[in-house]
Length: 472
Image 1 (tube, rainbow, N blue to C red):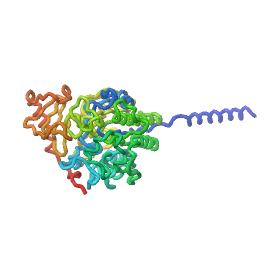
Image 2: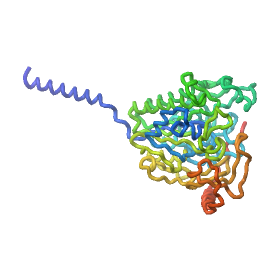
Image 3: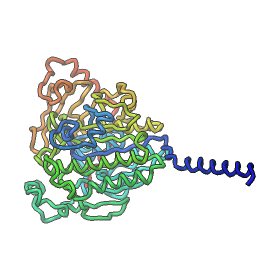
Image 4: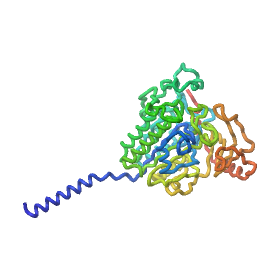
């Protein structure tokens, strides 16, 4: 072998080694930010470890809050399921879309309508720039095919179309009496709720004993299948809404009892999702948000959650009905800390649009604010107020630190009858989050400021046609 030949062989060998090393380099992650919303059902402000619960262990959600941002003044768009979900996905108060009603507060299995096609969902917004989109879990924006997620911008759907306590089997004892039974007597087969994959029912009744883990596993699978494309996953658990069910792995594991078992299984699924993002090299360009649709359903006692120091719960316009945990996580993007600025689930529409580089629709009024300056730079955001609708009426309004109640009303036999207050009740929520001490007499100028904000809102309000009133 000549010196020249030997040199060529060495050169070829070095090139082959170099190519081999390049092949072993990890794939570069995409530059586009992915989005995941994990949405609980009927979770109270005080139900997570990081929000102060002493016995429910939520290490993965606690980790999200510690590594990301924990918001302490974060609100759902309504205090019950259907309007709250419409608010999140459209970035609009549900009174604008018609997904709020003075007759029925939510959609039922015999409801005629659903989210109107004219509404632009967050999924449809993100698809404008090529996102892959999945809705997993509870929908509750219309069970007929034209209203399902696959007709509202989602490429894939796996979940139930309404609440997990609906479609009770006929012949059982009356609804409210049913819940007086021991938990062992409450069976998943008592609720003939359908489980959909896209537009087809694949299981009926849905096996709710395993559904929480199946939802989380579906999300993990979708992430892995779409890791090379920008994606949006909307994972809406149908728990801890009653009836409570849990898989064998988590049954009896929580000091809090069955309700705690359920939350700890949800938290375990959050851990699976975070690990998948890290394993796939997606953690630093994915934003994960955890929150809930409304507060705890208090009449169910130990099978309902806790609003912590907040007053009342689901269905009400007291703080316990609408203020929720709000956790944002994205290592390297989101500046860690505790945020006391006002925020709303409706703000995810404008925030994700800004991050993804999509212009907001100009043909409609949005109630969504861009939170990205706070998320990325801890700068103050532009949201300064919260409106508390019950159905199609404004019951209360918050501007800055202060909240005025124009109407108060109990729910489910709790917290009193409907009262229209000639002089609104006023609270400083930063000093009195439990809404105990009325300061209206001392601050008429603040009541006027809040009233001016409400009047400005009303002057531009165009109400959507009621989509909840009609039933078969």
